[in-house]
Length: 295
Ligand code: PEP
Ligand code: MG
Image (cartoon, rainbow, N blue to C red; front, side, top):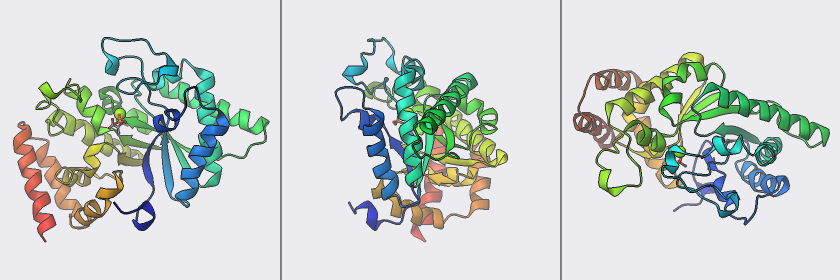
């Protein structure tokens, strides 16, 4: 794989902070987190870096969090649900992201939001983190953009409401597909149903992107679908602004996107919204993608 420096990229669409927390056997301090986030922000040289706040729980566990064993961890105590209960830990992380923002362009993204009240509580803590940094005379980005990851059916249905209070949204299609289809994304017995071409998933993706566009904010996709060539005609059709994928896929995706006509893709997505069979949808959009790649 080419090093990131050799690839023309527009920023980092999803920086998973679990990997930073995973390097420690105790909660990392503000200073330790600041070092990790600011290094990435500096390397991006002014391109935006979307830093996702800790998404612990579900399939991601860290012993020192001492999370309870649960019957349904994906439906349980994870992400902001944990962070909002551990205010000091959350404040340290928010302060570190805000301070890293002073080294370039960072954005804060909250995962697993289901209710407006959660987002309001998160924003309240961002304001508190800013005050603490001010008191300590630590430079930070006062105007940092704050958004949510749309990865629960609730946030996707309420996308028009969230779009009025967020600076951006980014769709986490891995979890969104899992929650909409009621299919554990890691369970091999039901992988056939874990299908992003399920029209319910497509409708929610379309609803989210169109709501964001209507509100004049950026709509991104940061799940695996952003790098799925056959799905991209639909995302372009709905009007997606940003696609975040692993560096190895960037050139291929860019090549495809440049060959798609937005108006035609918009008609395609409207057409797809009236098809019931996931396999019919998949074969239609795959043929569009393959035709574009063959030009
Ligand atoms: C997602 O859910 O689409 C996502 C990008 O988050 P993760 O895979 O880390 O849950
Ligand atoms: Mg997720």
